[in-house]
Image (cartoon, rainbow, N blue to C red; front, side, top):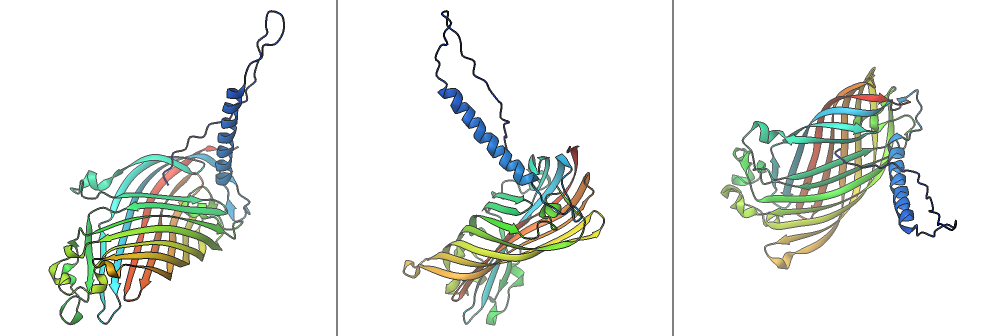
Length: 367
């Protein structure tokens, strides 16, 4: 999570009235002083609300060790991944899967109450010759509170996609494995969204222990998780840039120019923290979702452009493996999102996420 926060502390101020030569008090206007004080009060309340969210806990300390330090220093390598699969389910089944090479970032971060501020560099630009070929923009923010958590993402893909699978395009509907790994510049995707969820067994189960390193799970426990998500997806596709063996036999159902859809879902799942050795935790969470999608598909023949309404299944998964003795920690974690879109004779699956490998230490013991 990469957030920069400026949290000013409120100051108490007293207004001293000047006295005239005759001994009477001079009347002065204090509207500006009151406005400044009001702004400070608002900012102070915002700061207090954030600190409360991060530090609030009502844990059973026999199961969870609460935060013991204020500050954190951490180094982290992040790898983002994405994959898009389009397929038709008509008389002749065809499937295309696209994905770029994984992108890696190296960073160092300073944490305060679980918020991290730092800098990262693109490892591809440092150690390879891929400079300038991957113009993607990605933001992933994960907030892990004692009871309520949230995920936010914004993604705009680059121009370095490759064909990973091409099924059903050979003679008599055979596959074309020889096309795997071929560059394809005809796909661009933009997506943004959020997910907010509630942790039911929050007295005995800690999401921060698995993914934020601010607490330690002392005894294995699980919990039900329920939440709500919203996201918007925009996919542009130019099938004319596909290799000739695919273009020659491509189904009309896959000859679209654009897919736009908005996704609303209600998710409900289960998460489990397994403390298999002292200070060592393996965490797994699976949250399936019932999703309503409102979509519009644009084709080369505008007569067939239509708006569709569908119910599908989406998924959010989390996994983590961490060692944490309160002072030092190290581990790996991953968060993945799967969005599925179906209509008659056409399906689209959007799978993306991030994997973090990290190590660090805490300091500044709480009183």
